[in-house]
Length: 167
Image 1 (cartoon, rainbow, N blue to C red):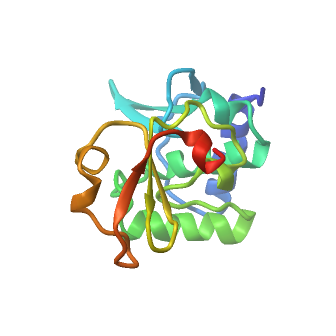
Image 2 (image 1 turned 45 degrees about the vertical axis):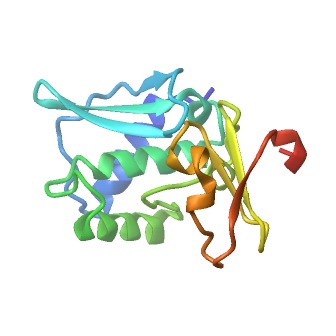
């Protein structure tokens, strides 16, 4: 498992080198969340300070992935960066150019090189192009796929098991 506290310290130093105005009120201890299944990290503001949290699979994954998630989260501590707006994206671009981070609003398990935490419950597939849509929760899409279309315009159907798709 990565020493996330040490990695946080390193990422904070890197942001300071670039003069990115991260908050000075960030807890030096990264919380490891063993239950996070659909997110990699989180930045919480509580009682006047920020707490950074990462999913266990990120903490146990490659160091560069953990640093990228930490960088993503510390940028949310900057003034005007609670969302993924233009200011946040500019800081993410600067961190990426300087240190090789791939910081974006969303990432996949494959991009970060971390394992899947839970199996997909629902798998849908386009009848025309074969695109796959994986979902963890029941939704209108999973219940009524005939109401939806793929980007290619094809009809979507529900596939009963993940094993049918080799997942």
